[in-house]
Length: 233
Image 1 (tube, one colour):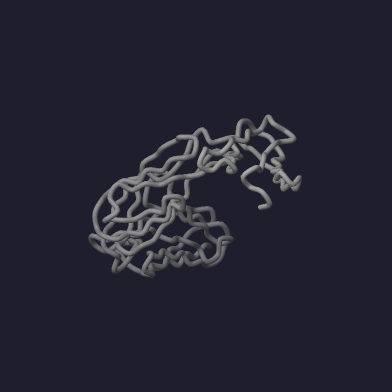
Image 2: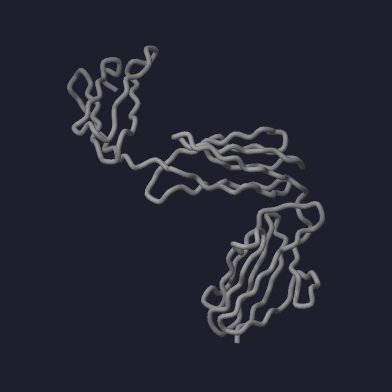
């Protein structure tokens, strides 16, 4: 602030990162680049002798990234991509969509807004160059969501009885030609839990934990609901 044109940057510890001088048009702007895991103190000194410092912690970059292979959304829905990377690593993520007439995506936030029905691809890239592609399908907003009861009839409400320790798998069914990300939760996780079924994409598994009653709620982005009342004995 006192004399930015002549500001200099230096470090007390040099191994974890390096200060890169700015380009010619902005000679007082410096970039910090991570080199190896560790900590460094970066200090800026003006020609007046005044200084400001910050501690920089460098952690490993990811070796892999996990995102959904595909997404099904309803027109008007908003959804934020949440990439998963190696535990203890750190990365910036950058997003690009092939056809922004179908949906838009925040270049740095990963927030998708579905605009029109159709299909397109979204690429997700980490700062260190790992790239994955998500196939996005946008359909109409759902008019209902239902689940098959014990007799195989699609309903928005029914009761399911389970023995202690038993599991039950179900697949939500949206109204025709519609799409949505779903929020699926249990009202009492100590009685019955619900998780995505790892063996059946789009399905969920309810596990009976202790005796009692719990409600499993399946909800679309536009608040269409189905409820399974689970009674554990």
